[in-house]
Image 1 (spheres, rainbow, N blue to C red):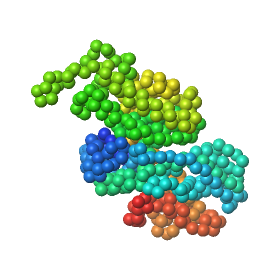
Image 2 (cartoon, rainbow, N blue to C red):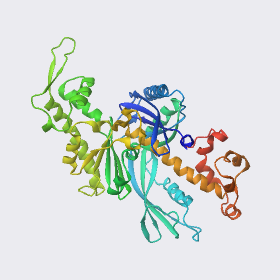
Image 3 (spheres, helix red, strand yellow):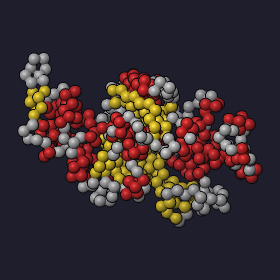
Image 4 (tube, one colour):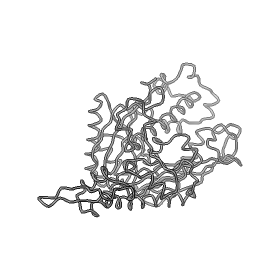
Length: 456
C-alpha cells in the first residue's frame, strides 16, 4: 500500500527562507517525510520573486540539502506556494443547463462548470490562479456541498476566484523551471497552510487561518465548511525586524535575534527593568536596550496586522463571535511570545497556534512540526488532494470508455481485468475522449513522453 502512493514535493518560496519537503502518505493516511532541505531566501520581497537569479540559487541550495537528507530521492515536479500583495480574490456565480436531465449529475459536469469560470473577465495583466467552488445549487435546492448524484435540470454555484499578477506568476515559474523543476500547480499559500493546520471540526465551526510569514501575512476564512475569503496582508515578520532596526538603531541581524530571543507582542508583559546589551560597532561603546521598548515596537506592528485581519473579517460579515473556531495562528511569526493574548484582545476572537504535526507520521524530524513549515506541508497535502481526486476519476472514467489500444496496455496494471469490459452505450454517448484526455494527460504524461506544457 505504502509504495503505491506517489512521492509529492512541496516548494515554499518565502521571503526569509525557501523550503523543499518531499512526503508520501502511509497506510494510515499520515505523511512520512522522505526528504527536507531549506536555504536562505534573498531574491524574494513581500512574497514576490524580484531577483530570479538569487531565487534560482536558493531553490537549488534547498534542493541539494533535500537530496543530502535522502540521496535516493528524485524530484521533478513540485507544488509551489504563491503569495504577495498582488494576489486578489473575487466572488462569481456560474450556472449550466444540463443536456441529459434523465441521468444524475456527474463529475464531468461539475468540472465543466468550474472550467467555465476561467473565462471570467479580470483586469489586464492579471491571471486566474484558482477557482474554488463554494456552495452549489440544483434547480431550487440551495447550499449543496456536493451535487454529484443529484438529479436536476440546472446546476449553479458560487465561486471564489483567486487572481495574481501575470509577471509575478511568470517569475515564480521561471525560477522553478531554471532550477531544473516543473511546477505541477501553484497553490495560494493561505490555502496550503490551512490544509496543514486545520481539522474537519475547525472547518465546520468556522475559523480564520492567519499565517504570519516573513514578507506577508496570509489570511483564509472558512465558515460553514466553505472558503469564504482569502487575503494577503503586505506586513509580516520582516516589517517587525525593520521596525526594531530603525527604532532601536541596531543592525538587521541583531534586530532579528532580539525579536526571536527577547521579543513579546504585549508590552505590558515585558519586564520594565530588563535590558539587552548589544556590542558596539568597531570599538563603539556597548548599547543597552530596554526589553519593554522592544515589546512596544513589536506590539505596534502586530496590532496593525491584526487590525487588517479584523477589517477583512468585517468585509465578509464574520467578525464578532461568528467564527466559533476563532483564529488559528501559524507561520514563523506566530511563535512570538504573548501573540495569542494580543490577537484575542485586538480581534475579540479566541486564538491558538496551528501546528502541522497532526498530519505527520510518527518519527518525523522535530523541526518540521513548527508552524514555520505549515505552508510547505500543506502543499504536499494539496498535491494529495489532486492525486486522490484524479485517481478516483481515472478509475471511474476508464470503466466505461473505449480505450485506445496504446493506452489500454499502459493502464492494464491500474484496472482489474473485469473492469476492462467496454459498455457500448457509454461509448456512443461519449462522442470523444477529448475532455477525459485533457484531464488525465498529466497522469500518463511519462508514458507518452509528451513535451507540451499547458500551464505556461
